[in-house]
Amino acid sequence: MIDLTHWKANKGHRRAAEIFAVSLIVVAAVITPFASTQLPVALPFMPAVFSAAVVAELITAFLLFSQFRTTRSAPLAYLGAAYAYAAITMLGYLLTYPGAFAEDGLLGAGAQTSGWIWLCWHLGFLALVLRYLQSRTKFDLAENLHISRFATTVVGVAVAIVVAALVMGNNLPANTTASGQMTPLWRYLLGPAIFALALAALVMLVRLTRLLSVVDLWVAVAVIAIAGDAYLTLVGAGRYTLGWYAARLEVIVAGFLVLTIFLYQIDHMYRELALVTERLSEQALIDGLTEVSNRRAFDQHIKSVVSMSARRKAPMAVIMMDIDRFKLYNDAFGHLAGDECLRRVAASVRSQLKRPSDFLARYGGEEFVAVLADVDRAGALTVAEKIRVAVEDEGLSHAPESEIACVTLSIGVHSVTTEPTTPVSSVIEPADHALYLSKRNGRNRVTMTDAAVPSAAVSS
Image 1 (cartoon, one colour):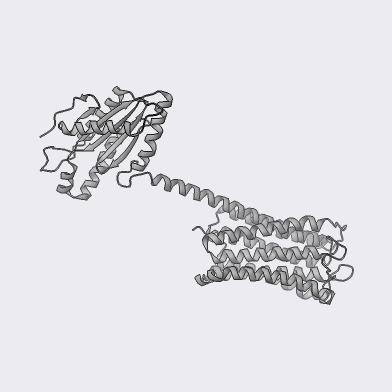
Image 2: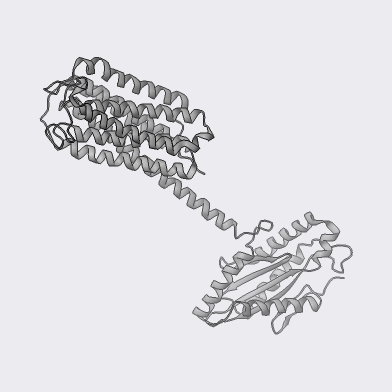
């Protein structure tokens, strides 16, 4: 199974990630001197932006869990748990944020509730990213047995955090003042701790994975966005400042970008799988020894040609071929030589089928069959005789016990214009009977269903 965590990043992926990561850092640097500038309070900002962000995080989690179910790759499950956790805590942050849906937040939130949920959102996400890294460097197969329980636990913890923050309400330590400004606890301890943890996670991510896979590359971008969120929130020093707005936009845009990249990679993966499936399907219709079509391919092809002949009122021909005295050849020279004989005969026959629509298959054992569309009786006989001559001209020495000096073909030809009710068997059986007549009448000859084409005398 293809594991997204091992999908190698190419130069295009790296360039895109570098551009976006640098953009996040440059924006933060440019905004820093003006980050504490108070901007108008845009109450619809939080519901509009974070509602979309929650949906994006949930979709990302769903995609990662879906890939886990397919590949049983524990790292994907841990990363999916990180995004599921982020979605739930982000939703709690949105619902309890003052002014987003209600003046004091929904669900009986206190003035400190949303700030502490924000803290738990970032801490939990980064902790799960670190757990993802651990699973990337030391994969334990036994973990797969407990991964569903782990994911359920993570979701339960996220819900419990939101509920606990609501229950404690204003009993939580103050993280903002009544005017929406940060308290010293937040500004000098909690905020810097989040920023430092994000930087530590980024360093570990780079060090342990070298960002070789697309997933690792864009998880690194998401961690940079988390660091940017913490930094801009700190330098903004309050709600609805330039830093505050920029911080939330950075993490939201990063979330959507990561989702887009995952969708692109999954789409790319399925395109690759479709190509592989197509190649395997083609290989399933090829004879592995002679590299011409096999019996299964012939059974499919002959039906379409019979149908087309009836529809277009055009003639078609079936040419049945059998290597003369092939058992003697195998007994004399061995099966490896016999295999090489089959390959050379197949190549000689194929060289005489000039049109793209001409079809050749190994019918079974030492027998081959060609199907020619839009070919009348004379044309089919001409092609069959060219095939016979080409194989004889190969000059492949036959077994000493054989009355034939070199490897030759006996050929039967049937040409017909079919009707809508014509069964496939009625097209094949006459050619097979003509082949039988060629062998009975001395081999190394072409026989039509009702006449024989003169051939060179059989060598003795």
